[in-house]
Image (tube, rainbow, N blue to C red; front, side, top):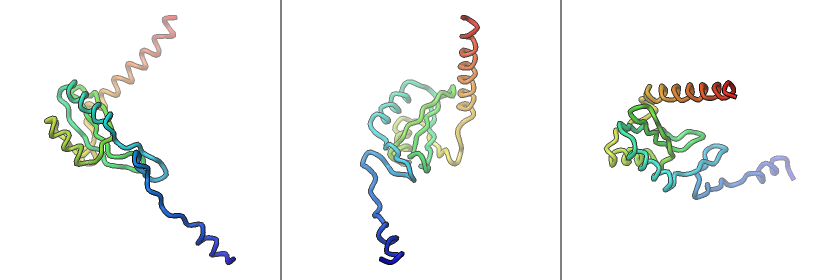
Length: 130
C-alpha cells in the first residue's frame, strides 16, 4: 500500500444534518419549531411598542428574530428564515429591520444595564440582611 492510498481511503462523504437540526461548522444548531413561533406570538400580544430585528445566520446560530418592546424588554427566538421573520412582523404590524445593518436599539442595552444593576443590588442586600 502506497502512502497516498491511506489518505485517499480516509475521505468520508459529507453527511446530511439531522432533520431537526441544522449543521453549522462543528456544532449542531436546533432548528426553529412551533414552540418558538408560539412564544413570539404571545410576546408580541403582551407587549406594546414592539420592533423586530432580524439577525442573520452565523457560525453558531441560525436566523433569529429579536423583538424589543418600548421599554427595552426583549426576547429572541430562532426562526425558519429571514423572509419568515419579516412576514411574521408584517402580520403583527410590527416594524422589522435587519439587525446586521441597523444594530440593536439603545433602549435594549439600557434595559439590560438596569436589570444587571438591580440583580447586583439584590445580591449585595442579601448577605447584609442575615
